[in-house]
Length: 109
Length: 114
Image 1 (spheres, rainbow over the protein chains, first blue to last red):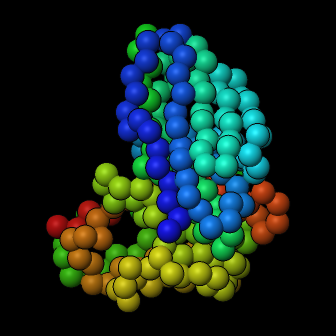
Image 2 (image 1 turned 90 degrees about the vertical axis):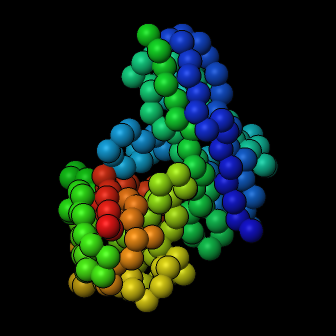
């Protein structure tokens, strides 16, 4: 069964305190793994797509990595404006997207 | 470019009533998806249009849900009659037919069934 699990559910960091969010997945044929950011009252906003194990993508303080079983979203020296829910999704061979429940990140000034 | 627009942003109805949600995708995006998030759970797939055709509706919960995309532009999702368990946030997303298939989401329509 295609499944995405994210951990932790919630994470509180001090400003500047680096950490990582995890997304483990089982899928019948991975077409892509996507990271989204969601702010309250808004829809998910695209961050990264990763297609194959070993691939990495970076954007400002965020860096996403991918292995055959999981992906990490590394946050380096976060700022309060990085506070949001981060969602991981996988696109399976049948084109369906499967989402995790997300990690709610709070960065305290 | 204008984003994905959803209407209404919030709807409160009583059990047994009908609600119609609307989604206007980004112009030129032939893929249109409906998703739903029930409180505390993950965003779940409902169905996928390619232009005006239903490509995959395997996520539709039951026959109380009807989605249409006339002319391949905007889409509607009707719930009739609504039940308590239909409450949640309904997201629409669109993407181009070719390329990376990056979904652009709307802000969602929150449905509360009392």
